[in-house]
Amino acid sequence: MARRKLTVVEQAIKDASAELGLPKDHWDVERLATLQVMLKAARHKWENGQSSSAASDMVTLMEEITKLRAAAGLASGPREMDITFVEGVTGVYKCTECGHENRLEEGKYTPASPPQLADRNRLRELRPPKTL
Figure 1 (tube, rainbow, N blue to C red):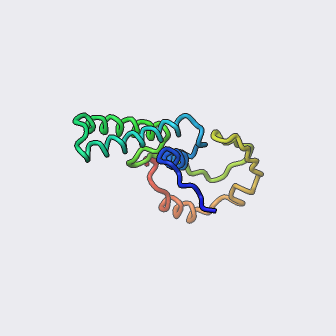
Figure 2 (cartoon, rainbow, N blue to C red):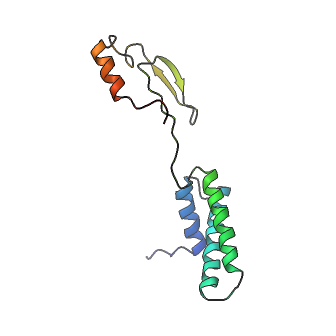
Figure 3 (cartoon, rainbow, N blue to C red):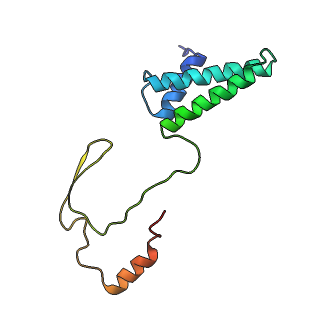
């Protein structure tokens, strides 16, 4: 039995869900999918000369899509990262995203012995500058 082909809206919802990493029934997925379908319709009208306002509609829709992607952390362009180097840690650390707790035992994530002076100098050479 052949599978039914997805409609334009269903395909847009599937694509938006994958792009945003959210379930198909999430409001932002519906919003992005709707904006993308509206953009396709406006582009089609503009290409066929059916509407004089389609070009400005396309620009407005593109701006809204860009805002939605930026709010979801998917904005194009360079991304900034904060990187911290540590020599060793112990204790319980809780992930701010998912709440998972990591219990780090003494000695497992710390150097067994303090690095020798030559090792410290080599580590300084390998470390990137503090401002990234």
